[in-house]
Image (cartoon, rainbow, N blue to C red; front, top):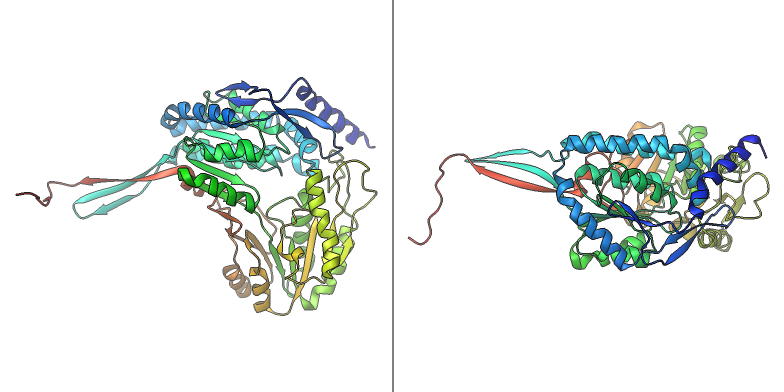
Length: 503
């Protein structure tokens, strides 16, 4: 082991020590809340050991949190945008101050490599600062003159909302949902994923030092218990969710009786389309980064490489050479590029596709440098070559370090293959032909398209998918469209004649 690796392990253990004192509680109405005393185990994907006992939220816990959010909402919604901006910037400052703690805990709780998690807290702080600066204008609307009247619109916060966040890069993705909700004037009940819940407690503690009691609440628990109670609670006006498409469908059904507004960022089976005139080296860089970084556990991963036939063999050869060099190891090792998958159940799901690919007739090329660690939920990076788009490995979201490579002949076939899945989150187009780039971007069924680029985050831009990949958009003022109601106000300009009835 290198000295930096040993130092990182020691720092991680020091940060994790606090969770050994007792069950990690909920955070309700501005303070820790132990609930009824039930717990569930949070296991580290690195070695399978117990990191902490977590309070297991039930309907009663969600009810307390929702009522706390309801009590806090009137005052918080009347807080001026400038005051909310100042408070959210304070939260961002405190996130930066605890960035190392957040990163090291997240590595051990999610299995993500430190080279990526070291930036997660800083990106989370950016989320708070970005939406904080928009808070003063979040309620702005339009002037809509009419004959004899002036119509104008305003936006007002919808009320207490539920935010259900995923287990991959959980801290950053939690702030991506929670920051705009708070900036809009909503109060929040947060239900984090049960497989990586620890940094949600850190966010609640940080916010608790700044926000009034009840503005941000946290309830841990299992999806079918705490999650369902949240989606069904009548005081919760909307649900923002990031996760699997099947879970999104269940949440929509659960919220239907109370007519909840829903915002879903769901799964993807995203094509990276590489034409024979592309800068192939850069295109391969983009393809491999977007599928093998973050352990392949990312909704925007480039999981289907559609490569024009003339360069297909070269793509497979070069990609094979590259994946053979991917460093697999402990997430706290600075050299590690690929850490363990989140949970043993997820590992079994991902690796089932490795066997399925062989059964379907694809060529399975395994990569990785060094021996797979004896403990932990590690999957080797793989490339499925000579695949066809109708194969399950090309149709189903694997959510792991597995790239499916499919050849195509021409632009028409590339577009057909790109769209021939139930998902539509992102697409990546690589070509030097400007006209073709725009044709493909307009024709592909995806909410986001990057041309000659990997996924580059731009906070003012809309983020979201179509088809089974989601409903609604995050980012910029698009987030406020979800967390706020638009109200029209009409003012008569003078004594216009009103029709009389009953004379």
